[in-house]
Length: 357
Image (cartoon, rainbow, N blue to C red; front, side, top):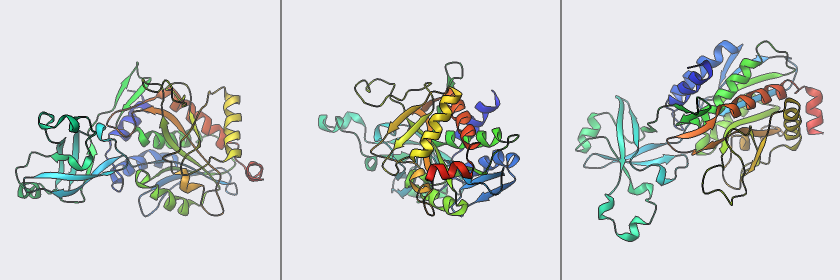
């Protein structure tokens, strides 16, 4: 397994749902420290490495988010089953019968998401999507007391179980938490690319926390860094699977990095977007575009920082996000890294004035 694939494996297999990102943050720090003159953290758990090109240049923030979608234990039944709430957006079809890890103070336990057997459902019930409130987690206990002896209690995080894997001779990466450990890895790789390069700015590369529950860590990290320019590095939706034939979106795996023109939380900065497009043309990197009426990225908080921070959300089309097994293209990732590295090297004060003029 090559270096880049190994990093993706380690980051995606680390457990870290929203609000419980400690393990992933430690792994991220291991990658950032050799590349950074300083590591900065906010009090919620966001982390960035700092690399100075021109100390008087613009402050540039490159950030993925550490958290993955998961669940939280909210109640233990008398018979020892766990009721739970989602941390992040889940489609119930993607949850039932999957294995999960319940992280308790006394260790991790495997559980299975269960529900009432389909054999006893009415025909009308079978046609409906089962609500998460009607599901439970079975950890093999027979009573509330057994669960308590295991150290499990309300408030414990629950993480999907899924190993990292590759398809198509390593061209496709798969597993849980590609949303958004891929963005975290991209921040690391851009910082790595800048190690022996001049750049007219100060770069802060890393990741936020709690994006999946309302972009909360984006606010704290932006407040700490005070960026002049920001890039939200995140996954997007791929429309290249059956069912999207008549859908207006066209983003597909392996066709290039993805730019969000807008989403529910932000309109991408026009000047910065144009600079990205022009740079992609120079490098002969294909670009894809999307616009969403629902959902958002950390850019929704970054661009409101201070007196306003030019921000663009950029990443890679990804299939089956917010599930146990997503898929993305390594080529898209590598092209996105090369593109953002080149754009960062152009971001001096003169370019800032042009963007904001």
